[in-house]
Image (cartoon, rainbow, N blue to C red; front, side):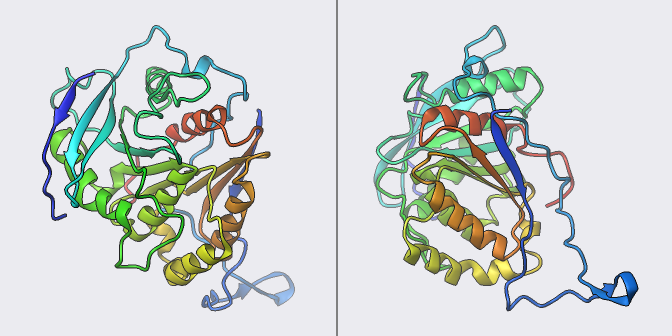
Length: 325
């Protein structure tokens, strides 16, 4: 692996798949104009479709399946390390997956998935090839791209240990991780790699603690990201969920909020996952406001066998070809 030293001083079948639909409006949500129904009874207008066609989720591999992340005879991307100095003057490291052909196709530009690790881990875990404790992200992407099931993409795996927060911050008061993303990580990646540098081509995903990054960085910055994927995560305390509702409820109540997502919000957890109930509580809030979502309940628990499967599933729906902004 090659290391880039940069000083950045930016100011800046084995699962149950349930597509989430709007379960009802918030009491304060303005009602749609009723239409005439059978026998003249009033009918509510149906929800409108998203800005991009609704994707179809591929089935998850079996919990003990390994072929989807095996290193096979297909073109391989590369994984390198990059260093930058964040807004607080701390040197940080990223792992970056570059898709097959990146070095040769010098005019090509790529969408970017920002992929976050869990608590106690670091930026090396998603790319680790360890069977029990690694994400094997490189091989998962290599195999999907070779099969034509996923877009060729750059995958950025930052180190968010020490900055991911279990509670949301008020709008306009970004937490440490969010500041680092907005001021440092995204500008660094856009300036040092051939990215498609707009929100339509940025996705944010994370497992467990990394799910907090998705919630607390993605929601206040849908001007930077258009796809959010949460693996085995949800607010731990009722107080944190209440704050999230207080801060983001008004935005979710807006009829145009769903238009900010080019792919529906995705949440997944295992049926024996310690984060299952936390995620279900967050899901209930999203459904209350009619946020379009995919909810995936899988076998297994809070483990890499699941997180690899979720990456495999979601990578296949990322960055759709459509004109929706």
